[in-house]
Image (cartoon, rainbow, N blue to C red; front, side, top):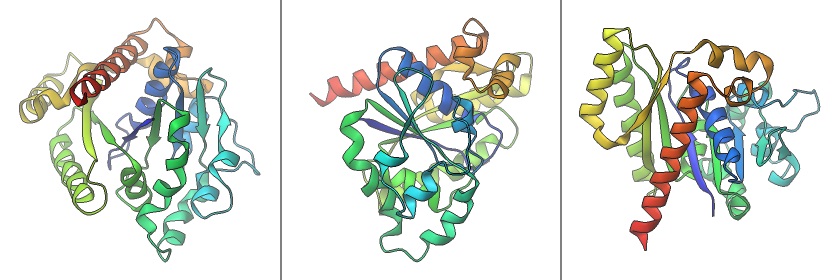
Length: 261
């Protein structure tokens, strides 16, 4: 049964899509069956794993409004072991169309639940907002990974997001938990980065991943080539960091299963 992990942050430009794409790729590289779901109208997670956008390409939009099934929209990526449900600009209208639907918060959960046994991990890349799309993703999910850029306003935004997760847990999904916060675009030369990292670890302790994703030019270049950085340059610092992050995820999952027995 797949662990459904939402990658979310209401702030844009924090490495959310990059983290989603490279976590999914790293997990697939160690023989896990992974489904990457693009919930962002920009569709960058889709293009980031080599999915070419076409006018008639079915997407999460068509899935959410009932025009197709998960089986019809799910496609294989060029990466072995990694399947994708792509997104397109039509998804912008989904929030409006979902508003008047019955049990609108549970639409995606009801759609994806029968497909969980097919995968080990389902990774959902959310838009940079806390609207109905992100709500649907979190209602369906087991846990949330928050990419956090080490900057001045980071802690304020993190506090808001953690509060939103607690509200969703209370009202819609009692099993939802914080998997962890991952520090992204980290510049070791910056005293501000170091201070923010220290503050986050002080407040959240073991909920912050040990692995830190450095600011790295190869990570920035990879999407323009339609590849995760793990395929674009496996030896760069960014690739090494995402592989370490995937190891941490696997170890946490293993520990959780052992504690449950």
